Length: 298
Image (cartoon, rainbow, N blue to C red):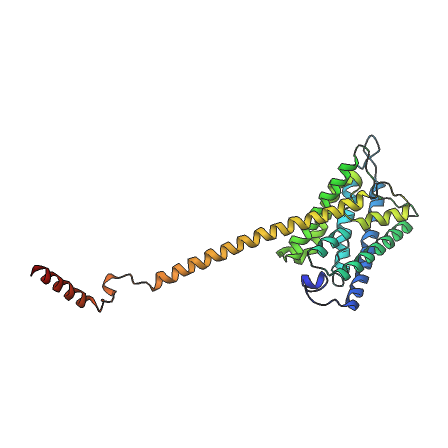
């Protein structure tokens, strides 16, 4: 894997490189198109599986598993393909969290957002074409769930995904070299949880692209405000943990320095009473004391 600072735009404080930004944005566009083509096509196959739900209004466990697997593996494959070019962010909510934390400059962030939206629409159209204009997978609230439940589900699930990226990849965790698998696993479990609620968005570009192709826009705001709010919450948690961690590290370093100083003093201090050097003024002090005693006796 490339260094994290290279993957996520540019080193902090370095001037933007417009040519490199355009190249990375094109990689993001291609990656997003591949991701949604694979994921939405997988959803199509999953929803065509027999439905064991007596009401016929919700996916059964097998369908949920197929949908989650399609998105989890789809994002992993896309990351392997475009990760060397753009880093494979492939999500406006994750992009927002990286921009706020300063891991991506704002120029590149804007270009990435445009690329993700365009790539998502392109991938959705490809999926719609190969499925004979029968694209499914539009995010809609399932019967029995209200707006608040849908919003908070999207918010919390997206927050989980963004925290995965921030703590594992940005902080160069040992698992950062396996970023496609880590992100894919996070996306997989998020879809297992969210699919029965609203089909799971956690990605505004994914929801927008499917709605553009199908013309279905019901409750679209949930799939924008929910994930973007989750991305902001993830940043707050991430920065809060970083502050607490830095304070703990400073205290640990201070304590270590104090212990080292005590250890050095202990090593240099004499431990044998016989090794203590005699005071050169001891005899003078003794003579003065004797003289003082004799004067008092006069």
